[in-house]
Image 1 (cartoon, rainbow, N blue to C red):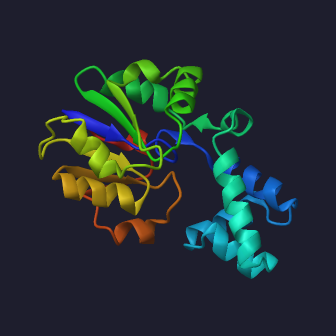
Image 2: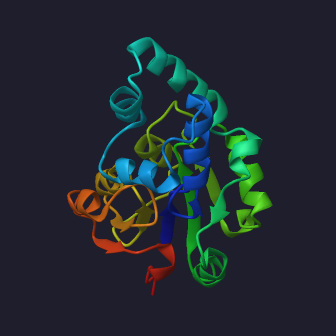
Length: 203
């Protein structure tokens, strides 16, 4: 069986990185970690937060977003990421009889591979696929010719991951460890919804 995992929010926790970069770019700690993520879970984008909480103009928002893309995968911020609790033990078990893949919407293949090696989990995966902001996950996976079938899975923390799985004709698993609330994920009708990836039953 082939199992495709999203990265941020699924295999690793990147919430600290995201909040720290947001705070650094606005030059303020006015929004605490919990306040920021409460807003994100209520489906507020960074643009919404900047406009409604900080009265940012459209030009200032554009400047923020450009800086965000430049810095979000910088080493200093990536080092703030941690593995979801229990992930390494989970990968040891699930990799014995299944083919595992990473498919992420990050920008840099090199930075993803460096991070996976730093966290000592790169060797669990048959391949690591990165959209580089050039391709959709669906197109990236389709072009790799993985020969997916209806018994295979995609596991992720966003509605986009669920849509991708449905488009590819594979099973979908949503996790609550990432960037979307339970109500938001339920609306995409995943095959299963679990607390985090370590609860995924693969047998």
